[in-house]
Length: 93
Image (cartoon, rainbow, N blue to C red):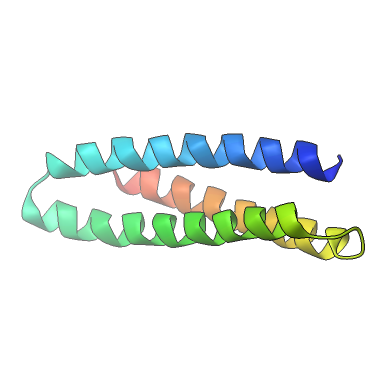
């Protein structure tokens, strides 16, 4: 996959994850204090992973051909981490 296609795909996935975070925050607001406290930790983890993925997208967008392999590999790792944190968080909600 070329850089532009990968950036576009990553941005779409990031938009989807942002929407999921918004939905989870809305669900969290309906919970009692104890449940919310547990869910906030999951949400912070998801947001941190999302932020790392967003940074990787920016790096990917600016990467030259020489750096393409390194940056794309880092982006794939960030996506994996973010996907795992979403899965964990969904189970807690």
